[in-house]
Image 1 (tube, rainbow, N blue to C red):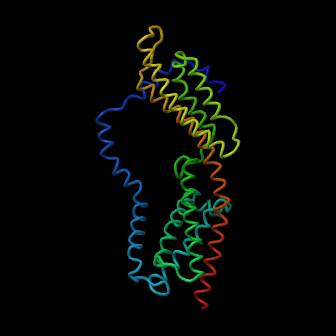
Image 2 (cartoon, rainbow, N blue to C red; image 1 turned 90 degrees about the horizontal axis):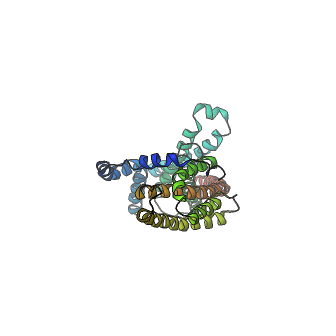
Length: 306
């Protein structure tokens, strides 16, 4: 990083002090409220899993029929919701839809329908495999739903949250530089340490050459991070005993900044991995969706004609 070494270490102590403002009472409060916060954040997912478990355990009760009544309606509504998934990609190409509803809300609707639709169709089929055409349609739908969940996971790693804007490599580099300033004082303790940090930076910031190589870089950075933390803590402990001329930062706070710095390095590498995976996912997801639509249409015609 060309401009990092020119940064003065005068702000390091202030940043270190700012990281250590945690209070015991706050930690206890967080410990108590964390389970409730988790339930609130994942209430929808927990509800869907509970509904699916109920349907699976009751699949032999014959309380629903795919040919008539509630089961038939669930199939119609669920299939319609799957068709409406097209509204999200269309909203990115049709200004009229984007003016009606912002694209991020179309994305939310897309995810909601992509979960509710398959759940309804599973209840429509009563969690059983039927004729050949219905089985193919069901398998295609499950592949699309599973692909959507994978895509959602990858999406959150290259965007600011689920509905935030897309991250950029420049943002991640800026985060790296911010955390790097605190380590400038530690450079004074060991030249080899500075060389290790420089090697880690170079490996993280080099040009993208392939997804497999990035995987290997992520693994090596994780290993080097442990080595780095261990070496820094040994240096700090040794300097606290022997050095009288160098102002040594607090070891606990320094460890926190080392963790943040190495995490920023790994985040840059993993960002490139997820970015590549997301582009590959797009290539796979669209054909699966088209195949699902075709098999669903064939299934509907087969059911009503024969």
